[in-house]
Each structure stands twice: as structure tokens, then as C-alpha cells.
Length: 123
Length: 123
DNA sequence: CTGAATCCGGATGGATACTG
DNA sequence: CAGTATCCATCCGGATTCAG
Image 1 (spheres, each protein chain N blue to C red):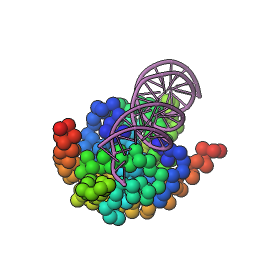
Image 2: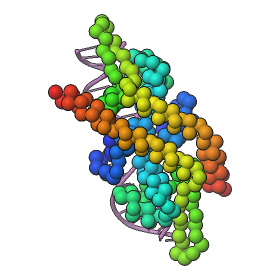
Image 3: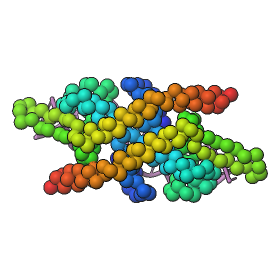
Image 4: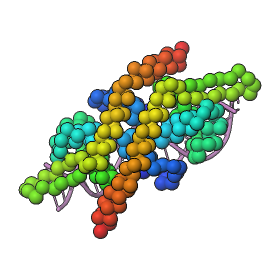
């Protein structure tokens, strides 16, 4: 989605951008992983199970563009690039933590609601 | 996205479901609208600018399934269906409010980061 | 090692028409 | 009124290949 499909269903969305980002599974996983410490491209690729090089690159670029992640090229050969959370990134991370907590607390309720709903639907 | 594309990139995602939901623009808008009070289908359709009948129906069903929204069929003719937030829905709404606040506070920083990034890219 | 470019299948969402 | 069904354009993400 990146930033609105067509480009202009504007609403009030100052938030849409952030929602688009955290609505993206990979972004969240990358942020969570980087919260454990700075990390390099391939290391991230290995540890984030299932992500493709392409999506990791795309995700990192988006996060970097939004200022959540810093990209540090170490002048060595072969080149190494280290990614880390910025202050803004940490701020977002703490928001995510809040969401995670909420999600954990309420997941049983959601699960239950779904089962009830699905049972009725099957019948 | 609904619930994981392929169906099984599992991770630790108790949160993924919620993230998928609030990552969806329509869901957020519907919740926000219902937070202003119960509402009927066509009324929602009119007030949520740009949504199609289909997407409203799909969105409402998802929200209902997860227990965020209640669907109340009034036994009159012609049939009326009133949607409203459940307690769980209100709980989610307050989380969203937190996110909105955070987003508002940090949007300047993000905007700035983007401009900086894009300027460098253009050059 | 760290990516960028290309190709491509599948899912998503819009438009439209139809129904109870 | 409150949806459902169908068709179709679009976009996303995976796999693969190439490059600095």
C-alpha cells in the first residue's frame, strides 16, 4: 500500500502513514528485531524467518525514509551495512509494545468471538 | 490480507490479527465513525467517503467476527440493521486514540525525515 | 555482502448489477 | 434498506538474476 493506493483518498489521515507502516507485518518484525540491537542485512534476513531479500530491502528503505531506522555503511571491504533504530524508531517501538500488551490481553476475547461467529456461520 | 496470505507464516503473531485489522484503512474509519454512535449500513456508506458497499460489508463482517462491532437487526419493515461498538470495540478504539495521539505528535518528525530522504534521493 | 531489476501469480479492492 | 455476486484492473510480494 505504501501510501494510499490511488494516491488521493485523503480524509483526515495524518495517521494513515503510520498505520500503513505498522499494519505491515514485515515492518513490525524488523523493528522488533532491531530493538534487540543493531543488525546487518543478511543477519536480519536470516533471523526474520520467511522474509525475502526484496521485502527486507523494501521494508528497510521505507523505515529509513520515515526516520525509524538508521543505515550506517561501514567503510570496510566487503562493505557492511548496519541498521539500527533511531530515537523515533524507539518511540514507535514503545507504542508497538503497548499494542502488543493490549493484543495479548484481549486476544482470548477476540478468539472467542471468532469461534462463536464461525460456529454460527457453519450451522 | 484477512489473516496471513499463505496461511502459515506463524511467528509469534498473537498480534498480527489486530495489526491486520487496524492496518486496514476502512476498519479504522468504520470504528472511528461508530465511536460517534450506532449507525446503519447506508448511513455509514454515505458518511465514510469513498467506501464501496462491498468493502463496507466486508469490513463490517470482519469487525463483527472479531467482536469489535455488534450487528442488531431491528424487526421492522423495511429491515433496519444497526451497527455499534461492543465493549471490545471501545477498548480497541481507545488504543487507536493513543496511536493517533502518538502519530500526531511525531508526524512532523516523520515528515521531516521523508523530505530529507527524498531530497537526497533526487539529487 | 548488500542490494537493484525483472518477471509473474495471486490476492485485493472498485464498479456494477441484482436480490430479499 | 442491506446486502450479495460477478467481473476486472491493480498491486503486492516471491523467486530469480544481476551488480557494485
